[in-house]
Length: 97
Image (cartoon, rainbow, N blue to C red; front, side, top):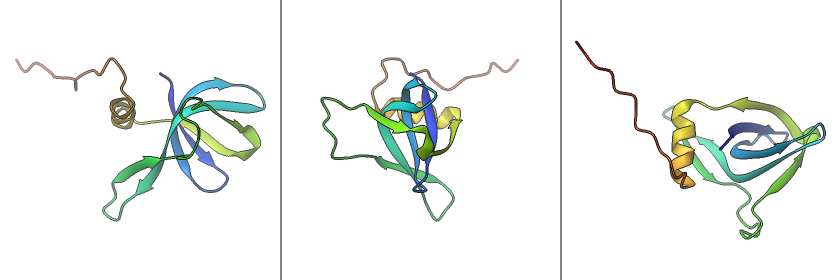
């Protein structure tokens, strides 16, 4: 699962699984819009809520993207929890000697 952050020209920041990337477009699925809160944390809400869930892929032209970035490990883990990744790894534990 290739989870990325996309800033759309509308100002929305969307976290989604990147399925395909070409010179002219990206194809994503399972988008979540990032919602900042007053206390400095962030929340998530479904993005493109009325699309056909039988065909959840969306194609976005690159001309509508401001930037694409990797996401923090904690955010990626939360995303995978939301979208049911079959493998969720526990937080790293360090052995104290």
